[in-house]
Length: 362
Ligand SMILES: Cc1cc2nc3c(=O)[nH]c(=O)nc-3n(C[C@H](O)[C@H](O)[C@H](O)COP(=O)(O)OP(=O)(O)OC[C@H]3O[C@@H](n4cnc5c(N)ncnc54)[C@H](O)[C@@H]3O)c2cc1C
Ligand code: FES
Image 1 (cartoon, helix red, strand yellow):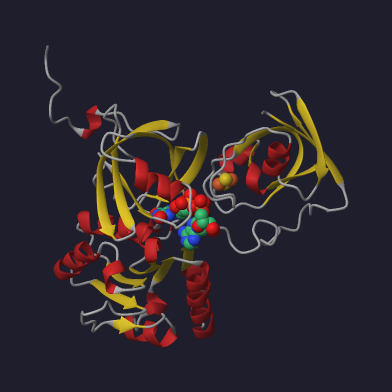
Image 2 (spheres, rainbow, N blue to C red):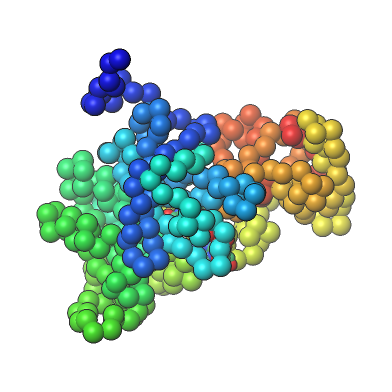
């Protein structure tokens, strides 16, 4: 029997695609006391094709149910044989706790993707400012790794905020990059020092004054930001107050914006009316449900016992995509669906509301 060759050129391997795929865990790396990186390969040896900053959605068998959770790829497509996600364990949670407790080398998981539009690929610039807090560092790390691996020594200022120095994720690797690339400027901001160790870097919360000190030329930079809602709001406020061109500011949220999806900006075409009745027909299941125009398709399906797989529930991850066969709908998404898919009749069930009678391919 001939053994598999150890090395094969990339163009001899099939690419991973955006259908449901199995991943096999090849490493679990502790990053901080509550953050781990999980690295996966494709069992059929395909290579990973994605943009720095994109995410995948994992199907996790938690407590007899299947739940979906979305994670940004912290790895870079410049090393295409593995993908890595870097996960913060949330207290009292389902998905991240399950990953920490159950996933080890050899574990297999189903995954969907890659997807997402938060990438410098869509916003080419001479200079970048990457600002992150906590696990929001993951898309920035993917973009920084890609720039570093490609020898494109772009002008990057990289700011990361953490509670304590020991909670800074990827610190050693980022410091190594900054030591080798003069145009890669790195700044950490922590809220408090670790006990019994000296911290001489920035301390406190990122504000306009600190931004001026760290990146005096930030007006010339395309800005990417990822972190908790309050953190991103703080940066937006500081930039707005300074008169920064917000067309050049891009952010990714890991959690639903407060009030989502109902309080997101509504386009002024059809506005769902809470006093108007609607009806959804689930064609394949041969079921029908009466509801209000302000109910989401996801909630209505759940209400009659039909499961539509869902992850983020605010229109980012694309897990809840369903095809609308007839009728009018109102969708306010956050980038989780492509224009071609919308043209083909697809909607995201978590952020789509029925107007009148709607038929779904479900
Ligand atoms: C586009 C996208 C990219 C993401 N990338 C990453 C990533 O790279 N790394 C990562 O660790 N997570 C990432 N997430 C978040 C991830 O999908 C899960 O939401 C997170 O792991 C929590 O899921 P859980 O099942 O553990 O918690 P759940 O059981 O869903 O929630 C438990 C509790 O924790 C709270 N909670 C959930 N998430 C957070 C949070 N991020 N911060 C504070 N409180 C929270 C909930 O409000 C709830 O009270 C991303 C999310 C999105 C939409
Ligand atoms: S659940 Fe993520 S887009 Fe609907």
